[in-house]
Each structure stands twice: as structure tokens, then as C-alpha cells.
Image (cartoon, rainbow, N blue to C red):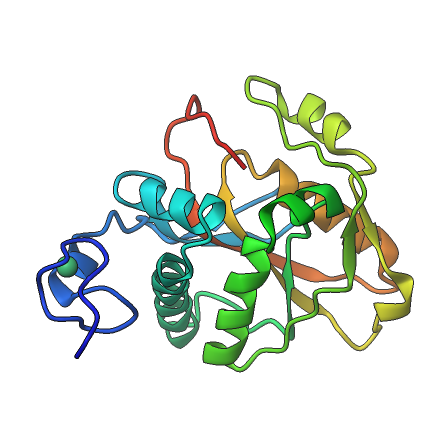
Length: 219
Ligand SMILES: [Zn+2]
């Protein structure tokens, strides 16, 4: 017996906990690939942070609904595969999930970015490293700040484990759940760039981006 679709509960299950009709109806990000000048080359996002995606992401993160996590990861994997096929993205050599601070990790019980990176690693055959970066601070970028303020706020939040630095690596994708201002990825990118002996090509892979700047995120 196939499990029902997580969204409609009626249609026969297609794959990854969603039926074909609901999959087509999702608020897919247009365009999925956006060039950036924030210390990383571009961001690839599967979806817009709108219903039903915001609800699924909350269930995944805060209620540990891993079926929702698998569904969301499948959407990102599908987006990345097409972009790689169309040569819109450079195939990275390594996936880095955005680390959680140890207090938050203890509280939540798992790192949602690591769960997504693990699925992507399996589906796209790219290795993942979860020990390369540490999160020293628990702060997230604040709403309503300009770019310089946000970066200052995020300064010193991340640290690179120098034992894991490999100078043969030149292309990395940072994996996160939701991107709002890009300040988290920017802070992590600049930390990686300064720890690396040679220039790194960095991209950000995200489940969803928030279309409205005023959307308040629980992270
Ligand atoms: Zn459905």
C-alpha cells in the first residue's frame, strides 16, 4: 500500500511523498538560478517560501517531519539536476550544510540543512562534509538591517576546521533550507574563502527563498 500524498492525502502516491498533480502545483522558484555578488557566485533555489511550502518547512524543522524533509529535498534535487543538465550550474566537488549552533542542535535534535545535504549527496553523487564548518554563535541575520549591518552582526559566527581544508578543492555548494537576505551564506562564504589557500567557487543551494522582504522567519 502506497502512502498518501502529504499535501492532498487523496491521490495515489507518485514519489517522495507527493502526487504528480500536487508536485506540478508547487510554487516553483522562477528563475531557480540567480547570480549573486555576495561572496558566492550564484544561488539555486527550488521553491518560493509560500503555502504550502512554508508549512512543510515548519513541519520538517520544528516537528521533525522527515517525510516532509524528503519531499522538499526531492524538489531541490530535481531543480539542481535540470540546472546541471542545462549547464547553468558548475558541478561542485563538495556539499557543506550550514551548521547549527550546538545549543540549537541539542534543542532541535537534528540539523535540517545536513538532512537535505545528505539526500542531495546520495541523489547527485557529490560528497558532503559536515565537519568543515562550525557555528560558534547562535545569531541569525536580523530583519530590517542593511547588508553591512547584517554582515557585522554575523561576524565571527562561523569557523572553519582547518584540519578539513583540502587545497585540491576549488568548488563548493553551501546547502541551507531557506534564504532570505543571503547574509548567512555570505558570512559562511567569506569564512571559507579566508580559510582556503586558493580561490573557491562557492554557490548556495536552498530549498526555498522568501519573496517578500518582510516575511519573518523562524529559523
Ligand atoms: Zn497530492
